[in-house]
Length: 316
Ligand code: BDR
Ligand code: CA
Image 1: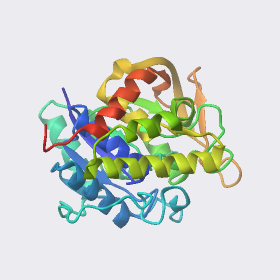
Image 2: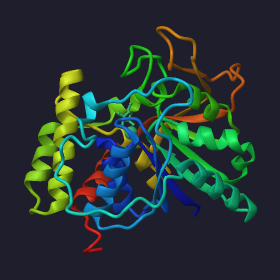
Image 3: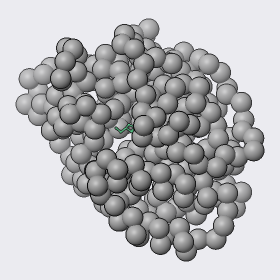
């Protein structure tokens, strides 16, 4: 299969998504980081720490520290000051491979195209890095295989503003560039992230049944934090799959049970709807059609997640 790059803003569910990829045979070949849930530096450190906990070595390239045009926003109110909800850190982690995330994407896709190959990319943060690479060199689309995005909404009800989902809200101009590009794209919007969940009681029982290890403690802290936040915001006592749902779609596309083919674009005007995604099955929007995930096999999703908390690279 194609090589895979993960582009991430280093939040709690980004960490879960990365662990899920590692544990289910889809380790990314490289990772690029971006500002978002926390600032770029914290996001990058978080990803390096996740890799250290997992005992896996993957090059991490830090990318954009701010959106294309608007001021930086973050989601520390969700992911905690450190971006990982205070999860216990490993003693040491590898250094960053470079502060060249955007150039790294550009060179990787360009080189792939020159070899007649394509590289897949999974994006679970703001779309800034890819937008910048596309702006510098539109021709890199020839080297991009499948682009999978966690972001946007189908029905226009957001999680950050009433209309906008965080990853799009954090850089609407970047999202607009990416949705305008001729790339084979799968979008996991906010809605299925709220309808695919495990009751908190089941999640707690799962952890209670596991032996002690640094990985388990790390994953448990992430899960606890995520459930606390979900409860605070929605009142639901559940573990929601957000970025991990997008990771699961990359691990095995056959997990998807329902999709919608539609054009997608982003409202950029200031005001109530800024950062809202507009979804158009009729194609009148004019942007290339993408595949929007609506439903997935929850049992298999849970199995992928379980693998990520009981798995250890040392034992593999
Ligand atoms: C998205 O925003 C971040 O908080 C999550 O990691 C996810 O990528 C959900 O809107
Ligand atoms: Ca994220």
